[in-house]
Length: 482
Ligand SMILES: *[C@@H]1O[C@H](CO)[C@@H](O)[C@H](O)[C@H]1NC(C)=O
Image (tube, rainbow, N blue to C red; front, side):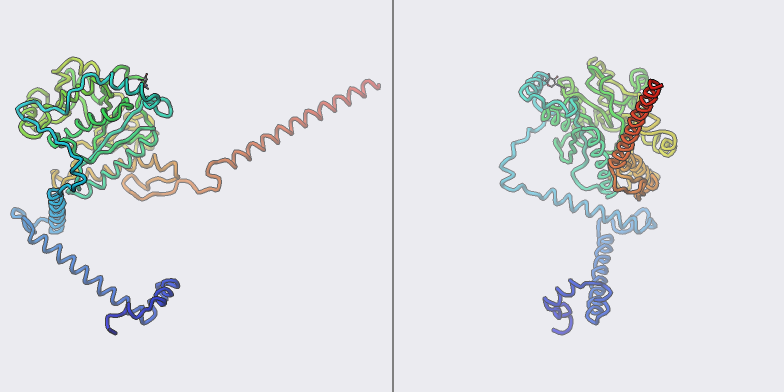
């Protein structure tokens, strides 16, 4: 009872007294305090040893073992880290597989339609009068389709995978990029939806945006424009706004180049990392036209072969949504080209390798608000695989992470400026004050001081005028007297 009963020696009152007058040094100087410290330290070491043992055992006994068969000299720590990430991921996925719907939830399920792979894939029941359905809804809900400033509503839509990234750095940058979108949406009165759920299991990876965009359009009839942004794209001009007035009757605004697309038929003639699509029948039809190329499996593989054959410089890989759009614009119904606006005057999408290395120079010479090469609107990390471990060759992912941090801070400086801070360097998440704090943050005292000074000056002038007049009158009087 005496040994190991350090905590029991303290009665409730003593404990309270100790906590009340708690000061680490004073308490630790007492014999009791030293004893508590010793016990705590032993405890900490025991836990640490246990933790290390578990890590090593996992690394050694897990699939593949601690040392890869091919390269036994590969950094032990990196291997161990990868192994831990892999086993954690496997555990999370196992939990997902095991999950059984509880009764209350399950009672809400409807049966999902099974896709018959011998028929073209469809996103849902055919809708052919969406424009009039929307118009009717907006007629019944007057005022809902405009923002507080009276403009047509835009909904920014983005998303990332439902489970944890194999590389935790990926989740870290998804969070930072999400913060960046929240900032941009707040600053420009956009509505915002971020999705982390799988809507149609056949439409995985790049294709997940199709069912999502359709669901968003159908469930937000008040919204005129839906703005899609890939999870690896970030706003880098926080002031720039889309010049919507110039797009007229266009239904799809996407970054691209006329010569690359229409003359050279290149698969990178446009980029679908960031685009605006109007909530209308044309857009639902476009999604329907793209969908058959998308389902995972042979349909996607076969479509990939077709695109590689038809589009210039496209590497051989399964079908992606960008190639499908390029293909439809070049070889499909002419209406796809007719209502698509290729935006090239500013970076609705800016390839990261062309823009990130210029940030410092731009900051020295320019200011936000241009959106073009003077201050890129969107920086898009095409080709980076932040969520995957060991996917890239020659450490490209490391460069991606360095540049993602810089892009984030470049944008974040524009947000923090209002609060009087800036990042110490683009590569640093540390910040510095750029303004001294003041008791007059709104500048009102300053303003009223100036006002009263002005008023006093006016008063002076008035007084001066009156005196002048009097003097003149006195002069007149003396004149008359003479
Ligand atoms: C909002 O809806 C009404 C009714 O359909 C329509 O007349 C009006 O043009 C719409 N406004 C905008 C900004 O879309």
